[in-house]
Length: 461
Image (cartoon, rainbow, N blue to C red; front, side, top):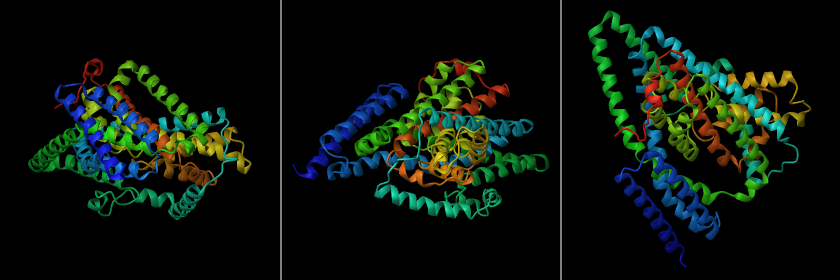
């Protein structure tokens, strides 16, 4: 049959599935049910395309170009709103927050993010050793060799900048340029500028209250408009999940995945263990961890599918405020900071696992206490500023391995399974940021336990 006709059939099937999800929305099926259904149907449809065709066939490739209008288009909408959301979230979190508690709130959130990143590093290192993972014997193909060469160049660029230079780069010389997403520390630069603007507004309150009141009203109005945009975009989540999952499954090279299956298994065991630690932390606060699982399922499913911590910020904030009872200030700050600081999966588990795998090849005992302690400390500190988009773990790995004095070539060898592992890592990243919001607000006695324990099924209209 003609390729064009086959592509048309595939596209029509996708549109039919989208129509089914739309009907379910009109009939008021819960948001969580629609997201999970989209996830399952996407996996099934992608697997069917895998069986009927081959992943590299023109039919699959051309079909996915059309699917990208839904999937990639949805992710681009999320990325479009991320910077405005971070800006208004941080500023309003500060101007509407009790200034006495502001420093404690930010400090607690950052502390939880960094500490859990350090714990994640220990979990990743331990899991890698239990599975006896080693870089020895791994062979690289043409794609992996090219990736390794590219990473070597990236490492050289990174090493030309001192730690001091990287810290300085967080301060934007042109905040509007940073708001375009440009620069190595764009997200943190926007956070810095927004925080600076918020603190300045609080200062104006004392000397020129009328000016401050006008500006605060403007910022709060801007926040309301941006959040409405967020709500409209989030309603598209089931459709985006459907298209993204179909594309991922239909184009995956399962032979390469099987070749590195032990690393995939070890990675997900480590991710599950760390998620269990998140639940233990929640339980230690006197909160029901099962409730946490149920109420974060939608946002974690999206993060798993879309592979973007930054893109998950809107749904992250919505989940914390509407379902978990976290005050808006804590939710906005934890979700925003969590997309760049202390990512448990990308900046914690992944670099630590690679370090343990590589260490024996250069004559280092990965079980040596000195090596493990240094690895955990380096990983926790290096977790600052990791990009909140797919691929951020690569930079985190380069950072940790270079500081530990280990070769970075292995990162390129794992290119074939990167997307599969990145799905789980991103979900854990988002869970870590949510935990930081819950923990900090609980410690400050501002968590609304009635909302946390209540039954909230759907996003606000």
